[in-house]
Length: 397
Ligand SMILES: O=C(O)C(=O)C[C@]1(C(=O)O)C=C[C@@H](O)C=C1
Image (cartoon, rainbow, N blue to C red):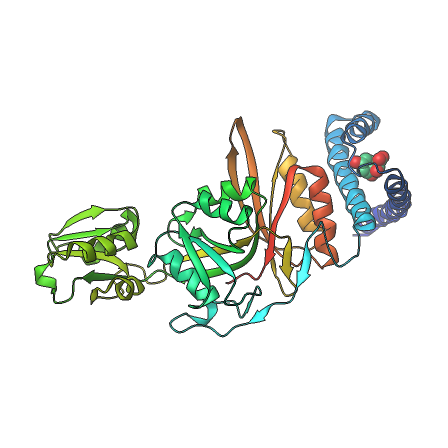
């Protein structure tokens, strides 16, 4: 026991020296930050870091120790960089061109679960133009109405890209696009478009997908022979439809199915769509809540072409590209860890034209007005390629 005590005392004495040297090193690193800021040089100097790792490895006396020293100095230099970003990330109210704005308090609309609806929204009034992708009566329309209310001046476009273009060119102030479904996952096309357009996420809205069986007025369940819907709509109502012996036909979206049933006025036809579509197309609801899972939801994003964020925003979305090399993603994640930020999601998408290279999308908790968020973003921006802040908004759980 005495022997262990003695050895631990030796370790304590060495550790005290390490801490003293660490603090000395950090003080020098702070001076480097001030100098680099003055001359406009980047914090990260990969050549210098590589050279440093080579040199310290040579000082070690075994391969095991060389590896240990490499890991240690990689950490030391990461911490040194974090400190430097802290010293150079500014303190003005705007960050990277993003301006804080005051939100509008809006009550939850009828039929919406309170937890699906942000109580604060981006400012809008009756004259504000809004575009959504999809057809009237579809879930995109429902999300648009949920966020902006029935009185807003809206129009719809057929594709996600047209929605992006309408926002880019200022044909509408806000756009509504689906980004993720709780059962089928992310909408990759929307991610890819967000990665290349200069549009920004300013809000989120969740629509609980609740399918109903719709038919012409006067039709009953016994009359039905054919059912139309989006393939996902049919799939999500598999238990209800099984054993019905109806022909199932896929169409582009659920509202198109409702429209077809209305236009053809055929009592043997039914559509799987929302109850809202029933009202919109003058159809009757033969059965409601027919989906297998009743917690199926689609998350929509609200986009605009201005760099703004609500002062109460609590989630940030960013995207960036990384060189195809070992450790690059690990290095980026350290910015979240060192700044105490909670990451909610990371997705990667192939970059068109760059074989086996990926664009990363990260969502994390925070607001652009927070110091630790700015520190992390300053670091990530300078250590990645094509870094973009996609938006800061109120996240709906
Ligand atoms: O030498 C520099 O340029 C520094 O900023 C110091 C330091 C280090 O801590 O050793 C930190 C960041 C750079 O990427 C390289 C090295």
